[in-house]
Image (tube, rainbow, N blue to C red):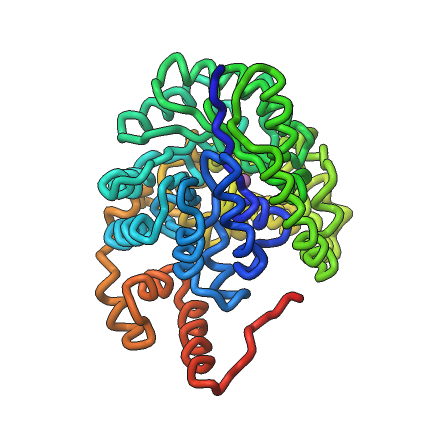
Length: 460
Ligand code: CO
């Protein structure tokens, strides 16, 4: 019987996708030991937006959260999501920061680091992958799934090979928008596994309703693992349900190794957590449903709601159709970036601007300018030459790895934040989110002195 690895996402992606990452540690601490008994391959529990959210909204030290989880989860691997050279933010950081961040994550208990880049530029993954390997953790290289004329099966396989050459231990196919169809995942997993001898893990969302079908075909094609969320936190913008996927797979002759009684206990634990989040307005029914517009427009659901919000704010909803048609044109001009943060925002905002100003690229955002200058990395396709000369004049975009132009930053940050940082982890929090971390350090000190007793935002 073939073993299928199940990664549980309730602590990270389900939390992020359904309740804007506002689940405090106090909401899940008591169930960690139970989760360790379920038979999961790994718990995705850190990275992504959890780090920022801990410091900004929950008054928690993210490093403390990781240590706490590690102390209760003894046998199941811990997993995190890392945005390659961007670590957990939206800009490129110098190599010393990336290396130190990975080193401290592994030191504090991280076992698997899933590393991705919004442009699928492998050069933006190299340093994080090399440090992960050096520290003895599993480096999971990622292919961000998207559809475009340049995202062919052949190019995806090429990227897979490059990830293998780089030393990745496994490959994740990340379908952030939930638009990957069963046919597409089947073909991609088949093609990849014929060319790359690494375990392939599939990550999708239920947003458009394709998720469970996509997982089933992925497993049939030879995928070794899938990401699922315990049923109370599954569906909608989150992952397919752990229990349902395990039930279906077990019945088809695969082995997930999951203990259904333990899963039931975990789910019973999370039901009231969900109820509380619904009452607090953190989970809205809209996120739990199936939203198929993304399949019609071939853009992620989040981009559609942003588009509506932008147009409504400018009292221009009558231009919705025009803006929607402009989005794929802008994406083409930019060389077909995958639509994931931050490129999805760039494309969306530029398309609206083009339509509302009435002249294409009369106004160009600073982010799009930086993108065209090559500061995010190499675009998957060709950036429109006319647009390049419009933005850069006679200058040429940089072609080196963007971080090659950055000077080491750790020591400087350490002296800048001074005594407020109590250890290197604090310095890294400060580098990643300067104002947010500093204000967290101030509140922490005040709380310890007893001058302030509150948290920034208590969700009861
Ligand atoms: Co996701």
